[in-house]
Image (cartoon, rainbow, N blue to C red):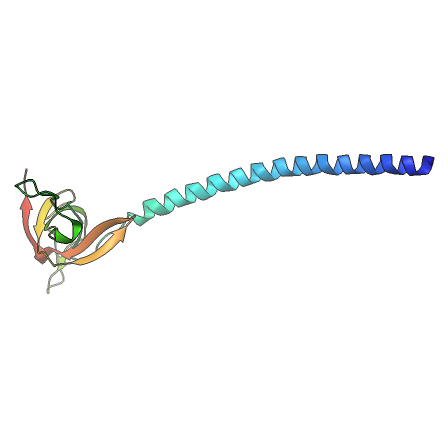
Length: 147
């Protein structure tokens, strides 16, 4: 009988030691997981910042279209299907300029931050960070809107 009781005691001690070591390891693991989570979050923010660093080539311009009117002058609210495509936008980034035949680069007339009017169906639509943008050529810009 004594052998079985001591055997049980030893098993209980071994079991409790295993649980203690598991708890210590789980604390270490959770700290390591927290460190990994913070590094992953930091990498995600870096990727998002890199995603917005788009520089158009040549005489192209990156434009964020301004929102279309949701109400008419009479106060009627328009559904999404009835809204017209916007023709006004804000310049987000510009290329270096147009390459001339003699090899010189002609700088663009528009600057970052300008409000412009452009052709209704001109440019290529892209999504950056979930927002709609257009890449258009400078020749598609109709006018620069001054405030």
